[in-house]
Amino acid sequence: MVTFRFHQYQVVGRALPTETDVHPKIYRMKLWATNEVRAKSKFWYFLRKVKKVKKSNGQMLAINESRTGYHNMYKEYRDTTLNGAVEQMYNEMASRHRVRCPCIQIIKTATIPAKLCKRECTKQFLDSKIKFPLVFKKIRPPTRKLKTTYKASKPNLFM
Image (cartoon, rainbow, N blue to C red):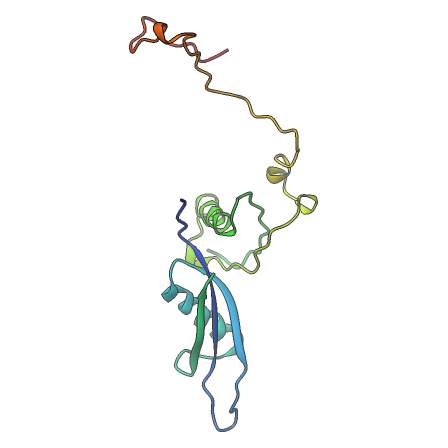
C-alpha cells in the first residue's frame, strides 16, 4: 500500500462569539497538509489573511481528514488517487520551480474527464489503443534443463 505525505483535511472554525455578534459566521476550508497541526496552522493563516480572524479571537469547530511575487498555475496529473496527484504536484514544484511546500497554496483539486484535458503530457496517454515498448526483454531458456545460474556469455537485451 502506498503511503502519502500529504492528506486532505477539512477544517471548520469561526470567530469567538461576542455581545455584538452572538452567532459569528462559520468558515470551512479543505486543505492539504502533512498532519493535523499543520492543517490547523494553514487554516488560521488563510482566515487571518482573508477574513481578519486571528487564532486568539477564534475557535476550531471540527477537523476532518479527508520566491518573487505570486504566480497562478494550472496543472494536470495522472494518478489513481487525488492524494497521489497532489503528491506529484508537490514533487514537481519542488524539482522544477524550487518551491517549498509551505509556499504552495492549492486552490482547487478535481477529477476531470479525458475530453477536458489541456496538457500534452496527459493527452498522450488518453488513446485507448496505446502501446508501450518492452524495453527489457530477456530471453528465457526453452526448458528447465537448459537453465543455469551462470552463463558463458552476457544476455543480449537489445533486439
